[in-house]
Length: 78
Image (cartoon, rainbow, N blue to C red; front, side, top):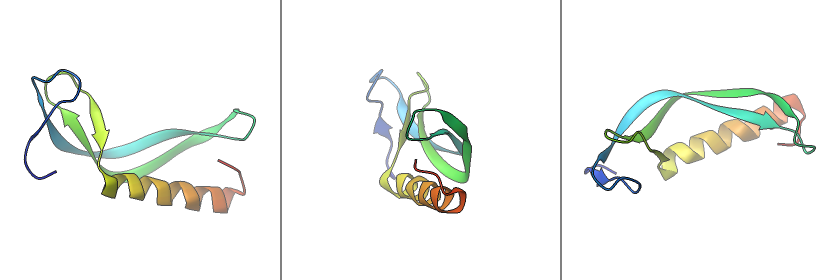
């Protein structure tokens, strides 16, 4: 998204990329929290008005790849 995408939620704001460390809880197959997975340098598209956050496909793939590596190294099903 190079041009300013209107917000899907408030429809008044626009999404801008905000580089941050993405954090997600990691669950096991029994829905018990194992830990927090952190993925640095993710551009989260954030609405300047309401704060809604959206991931584009490129950054979503980065998170999926990190989740697969995490699962492999930890030996956990996530």
